Length: 282
Ligand code: TA6
Image (cartoon, rainbow, N blue to C red; front, side, top):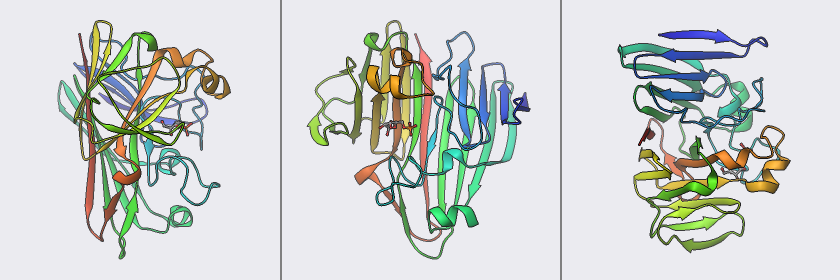
């Protein structure tokens, strides 16, 4: 079942329920902010103090970073992580594939407003398939007459029992930039978290596992050679108005994207696809 809902402040979202899972997707930012497979805990972390209002990205779920990741390269006045996550997307397709699987597609195209922020014409679609797995696909098309480059990410926040319980498998041997020091290192073995982590891994495995006691979250990605691992830890969490002070203890971001040197250049009419398939298993 796919239903359109509104909060008291008219904030619009879609609710999906089928035999295998449920999900909620805000029209602003095409932002998945809830996904829960049957008999499994909610997969995506969502801040209890997140805003749900026009112009402010939800803290948690899967924000869509486009057409740039992080701060704008030359103009600090432009929104961090681009404008897609605070733009109003249009629902262009809703279908029940069967009783176990639902598909929605949301679209964002360039317009007068976006052209003031980014001078290129584009068509972006987000396809979301909700079943025992969550499949998220960002398809970018250059609808301009000139080439453009962009960076992007599916900035996924995951629920964890306790950040000190987790380890991330699939990064071994990858180069990474530590965004806190701008230094480059090579990952040795799995990654555990015991401090603020903000790293961009390059050429990591297409299959990443987030081990959390008896539960493992699996990410299978396509179209990306860069993965961000982020936990704000104590001090940064305290400074975030839309995150509880102890929120860092139960979340970890694993963000599959096209970041930094993994930027994408599209000629007119060319298309790029970025996809992640997420599931959790004991
Ligand atoms: O996840 C990587 C990152 O760029 C971090 O540096 C941190 O800024 C995070 O994104 C959250 O950004 P936001 O704009 O959502 O507060």
